[in-house]
Length: 222
Ligand SMILES: [Zn+2]
Image 1: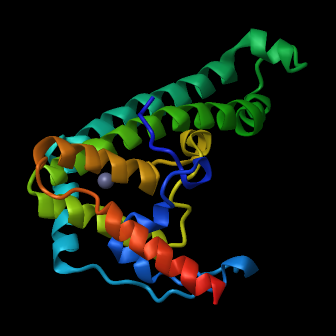
Image 2 (image 1 turned 180 degrees about the vertical axis):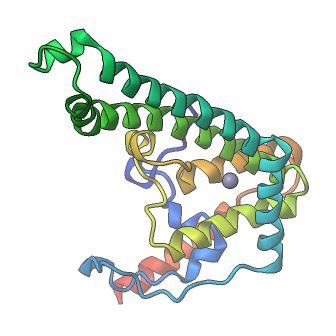
């Protein structure tokens, strides 16, 4: 399990304040719980685009596409092997209430019962693999330079705001549904590389975070 910083609910710094880029997020209607945010889409800067490209190159460097093709081959084989077994198994036919294997009965059972269960089980595993690959590709980009690392952090922050995503989903939600780690986890993954490689330089500007937090509070109380 990855080490996690305290979430905002646990008394940590609100995650939306972790990036300077996010200082302008519209929180004025927070109490009304709008379904869609009104913040204009924020474009990526040149630095951020370079960092994103470095992340994608990280996938290429780690041969992720080739590995995914192997994973796909194995999971496809498992899926069709299961269907093949179900169509000809006398034991399964008896379990389904017919005296001998019947193709469309087995197909029905596969479509509605076994197939979806198998798919979800496979997805749980492949999502886990994909999430690990994201951390590796992030680290690859972050190791290029501190500017790339920061660019990746702020671009992920923008992406999260632009697409109205929850930046800090609970770990079990991420495990069950997400093929990419949450913004919070990726942010801290990159932060770890920064601490390791670029220590001695200014790190997270908590003083600025506190400033922006104070500003937001002042805005809200108006
Ligand atoms: Zn990626």
